[in-house]
Image (cartoon, rainbow, N blue to C red; front, side, top):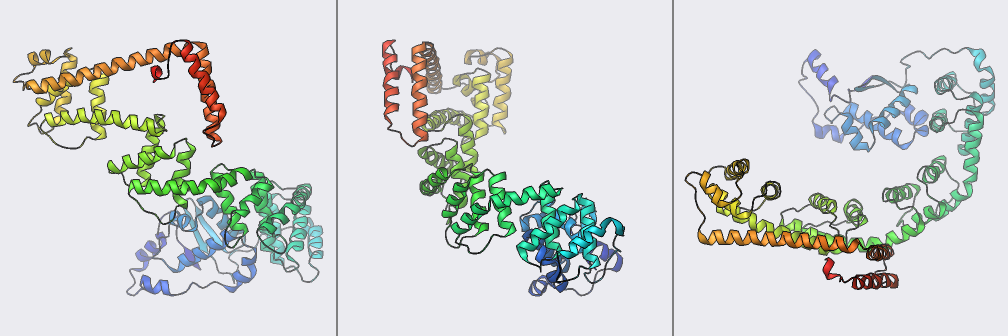
Length: 556
C-alpha cells in the first residue's frame, strides 16, 4: 500500500518512519528520483481513467508521483499551486476516488490520503438487499446487451444512489444518455461522473433528467455553431455541452458573443481556448460582441500605453498580455487618461518605485483623491514639490541632509494643519535640534510643548526655550516669506471656494454646468471628444456664467 502523507503537515509519515526505524543508510538522490518513473497500474488506465475528468487525472497522477518522491514539497498548499486547484476541489476529487476504492481518506482536517492497491479490495463492499434493486438490475442489464454487468459494478451504482438520493429511473436515463453519447463500451466510472455532476446541478428525479436533456437539445443548434466557429468537425462531447451551459447560464453570455469570442482566437482553436478567452472577458466585465470588438481595437492602444508606461517606469517585459489584463486595463477602467498614467509612471521612477505593483499602489492613492487627469496630477505634484522644498529647509536647518520621505510629509501636515504652526516657528524649533541624535522626535516634543503652552510665534518661543539657537536675519526673512506665501495661498483658496460656492448657488449656472458635465461624460464614453453636443453644452454654460458676471477663470 502506498502512503500519501498528511498533506497539511509536510512529510509527517516520513518523520514517523524515521522515528520508528531510524535513518536509512542509503537513499536516492533527488536527481536520481527525477530521472526515474512513476508506475501507473493498468487497472487504473483501463477501468478508471476513461471516466475521469482532467482534474481527477491530474490529482491522482500527481499524488501517485508524490508517494514515490518523498523529497518533494508534499503540502496541500503546494499541491493546489502546482495543479491550479482549490483545496475544496482536491478534497472532492479524493472523495470520488475513495468511492471508487482507489484511495482511503485517513483524515480530512488535516487532509491525509492513502493510495490503495487496485488488485485487492481493501474493505468488503456494503451489502444491499436484493429485492430493493431487482427492477433496477434488470433494466440496467438490458441497456448493456453485449456484456454482463459485474457485481462490483452494480455495487458502485447502489452506493451512489444511496448517497446522492437520485431516483433509480433518473439513473437509468443517465446511463442511456451516456450510451448514446459514447457507445456500448462506456464504463461505469464515466457514467457515475456524469451523474455526480448532474446531481451537483440539482438533478434528482426522472423529470429533472428529462429537463436537462431538453435543455441540451435546445442548445444543439447553438453547439453546432460554436463547433463550426472553432473549425471542429464531428459531434459535441458532454464536456462541450457543459461548457456551453456554463457560458450561457452561469456567465450570462449570448450566442453571438460566444461566436465573437471564438473569432478572436488565433492559431489552433479549441473549446479549452475559447473557455479561457471567455473567462478573461468575464473578469473584465465584457459581455457583448460589440464590447469584444471594441476591446480588441482598444487592446492595441493599451499595448502602446503599456510600452510607454514601462519606458517611463524603467522596466521591460517581452509580453504585455498579463500587464494589460492586471494593470493597464483596470487603470483605464477607473477613468485615468493615458497621459495621466504616463505621468504617474515617471513620478514613480523618480521616487525610486520601479515595479508595476509599486505603481499600482501609487495609482490607488491618486484615485482615492480623484486625480485622474494629467493636469490634476501636475497640479498635485507641483504643490507637493513646493511642500517638499519647505520640509527640506526644515531638515537642513536641523543640521541634516537627506531626501524628503512620506513620513516627513505626514509629520509636517500634523505640525501645520493640525497644530497650526507656521514655517517660521517650525524652522526655529528645527534650529534647536542641531547636534541632537534624533532630530525629528526632538522637534516634535518641542513643538508639542509650544502647543500645550499656547505659543504660536518665535518671540513667544524664545521666552520658554533655554539657550535658544536663534535664526539669522536671512533665515527669519525666508521663513517669514514662506509663511506669508502660505497665508496668501490659503486666502486665495478660500476666496476661490467662496466664488465657486456663490456661482453654483445660482440655479441657472448649476443646471448648465451639470448638462455640460453629462455631455462631456457621454462623449468620453463614446470616444467622441469633439462631439457637437459637448460644444453646445459648454457654450450654454459659459453664457450663463457671463450673464451672472462670472467667467470660467473666476471658478478655477
